[in-house]
Length: 254
Image 1 (tube, rainbow, N blue to C red):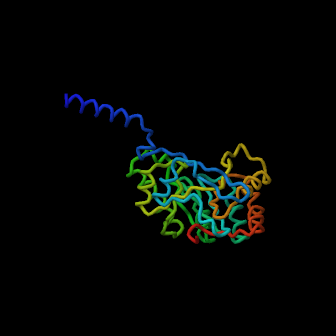
Image 2: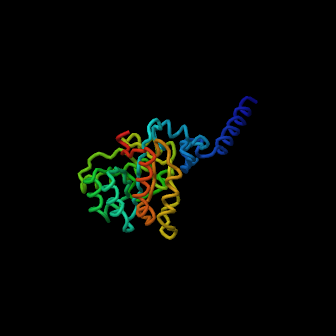
Image 3: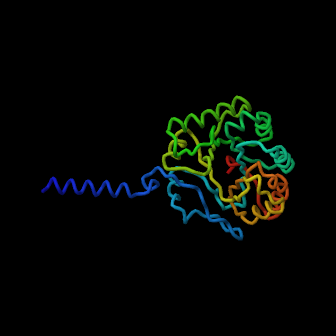
């Protein structure tokens, strides 16, 4: 009877485990999302199921909001002809940024990488082949990140790489833990809009409105450099932010 009860208890335990979502078992996947800022209030992840996971591993989605500071970041998976124009504006306005790059971008655009570093920007890691990190092994994650870091250092002389943006915004407790053990801080975002679709560009005014309506102290702004709208709106976005009393800093200047 005792053995029967023990067997029944084990089967119930296994059944309960099978019914628990993968995220609750510690390996996600989570897809990053957030509640957008309105009227300058902080963006929020309070309603998301991963808030504690991000905090556990020191991941960033927005910075300290005590000061009116903004942190500009770009994802560079491939070049669409607008990064140089964006760099021109950042140089003219004296605004620093972090550019998260992939292996394809590294191999395709070494001169732009050099320019980023020469003009005071940081290059961050966006993985070599842009995989869903939750679907690959710890060893594969390490290899993906090391290839980016090594190649960027070889091309630009930037030997340190502290910041990682998980491809597609997909992550898990495991992927955050592995990348943290390799010295990375995972960086998400608290200002963003659908700007990556090059077939859906609606003009500089559209990009401007989408970004400035979400600004809040400590915001980490995610933009994609493939967007023509972003390139054309960049100067106006910076000017408006400064008129509202905001200052732009790099992530490592927080």
